[in-house]
Length: 296
Image (cartoon, rainbow, N blue to C red):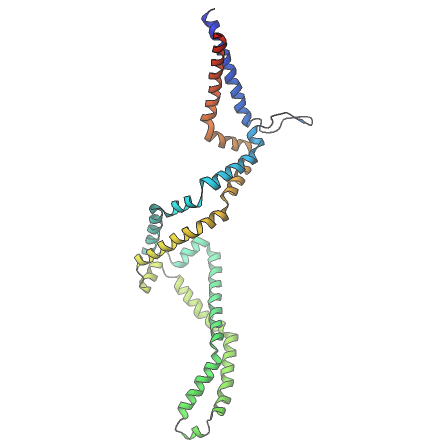
């Protein structure tokens, strides 16, 4: 038997193994759509990956959401010294700048229209709180009491003290107190709104650096407070964040939204080397089987 005839069996076995595994790997992804002959759908169409894309998406979503991105992972990522220092450095740089103003800063974050709407809501909130405080203070009673006391003090030791008894004083000051209280309740917000508006405008025009100077608050102390609040927020809220964000659901939704070509590229980007190894392994096994047949 010639050398070429000896190698023919193993080489043919190797070729068969290679082609068989190549077709098997390709059948994972192809065809991308079911092949129909009339009402009959050919078996193994579409390929395994396109046919079971929903199951793949669900499995990947659970793996990522439950195993790869957990609450402790995010907590460690956000609370490591490098991440915290980066945030504190950005805040420190902001505190040192005279620009932007608070208005410009919030406008850039929220947009001009949302900022304007928020400022109006803040103005309404403050006005409502102040007028509500007026109600709880019972300004009418305070005015009556203080007015009566002032009249008594002014008339004490004079001829009017004989006629300015409590009943007479009450008849004069009680209607005035009620009138003032009624006026404040009806027009209080209109009276204080211009003042509140001006205070908000003045406050918004300032930079954070100027506010720190005015209040006497030390930057280092503020940064310590920011770090404590940040750490507490991450520690207590990261689990709620993951639950509300639903990472598993987002991953599943994203994969389901991909078409067959995109899913194929995704799988190949991770497993291309392994799939090629499977194809080459088929050639090796075929060669070995052919060699065994030759020997026995």
